[in-house]
Length: 245
Image (cartoon, rainbow, N blue to C red; front, side, top):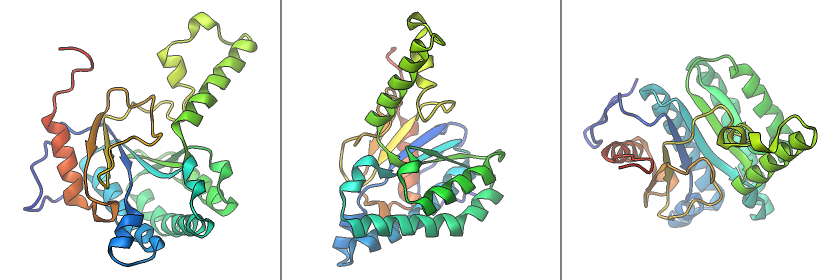
């Protein structure tokens, strides 16, 4: 259960974002700052992954999407990529049962078939195990890139048109959205990026058309519950107009 501490701003639990996306950035810089190898930053980040999932679930956020591994991250050194995959295996293996007890629904966005077989198998198991839960949806963006997602959707729609399952005149925003990885999930209300960088980095480009953006200098291993609550409070201070007055 959520318990506010004295450092945290007040939150209106009746006015929370339905869907939050987090670009978890700064693990390597955190490690460098602490004179540690980069992999230590990724391990430290897992602590705050758990905190973000637990807090989101406890206060009633319905969808949390975590940008965990992008299609561009394959460019990193092989030993770092291998360590990231090992940490993911370790984390899911350790935390799945607790998430299941909290009724969290585990889903993925991205091409998980491109991940190591052990990782893909555990993800499929996690998805199946939690499929019928009634709590928060946890979207793990793994081997994910928004441009690739959009091209994939275009190809899928083009194939349906070719097979005469869909008419060109029938293509609209809803049809397009239903061909994205996030089909059936409302667009994010709030996108948070840690580490001070102010860019989106190929994350949910179509879906964030009217998302509120929040950039914090906190490196992700320092992005604890207090930092998360600050982001949510900032979201609640904004007036969303969706192009209107």
